[in-house]
Length: 159
Image (cartoon, rainbow, N blue to C red):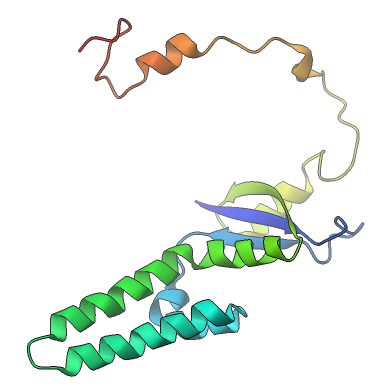
């Protein structure tokens, strides 16, 4: 399953949510294969130019005698960084343009994420008909949190 960041445009979402964006927060294969071009395609000019410069540098280093693996490591590092953090850069760019992170949806694909998000009563601006759970006191989870340290600590804090 993947998580999708839901971003709404400046001024709030429209009634039909036509401009609401879903950004998949996870590994991007196309960003891994073509990191600089992927960033430039997403209009991240500085990051895209930097990635292209680092890719050219990696190729230059790899052509030097005895430095093939150093160049290859640099190229793979740039590709992995863009593939893993590229979607976060896209979301951050939108937030700098006054878009609002409205929520995170965990789903198998974009269609399911949209269905889950748009069927949420809070998103649909419908009044929830269920009970008001916020009026209940919060449970005391301090004891449970102290005991959930992967079995390394018992309730008294010892080993």
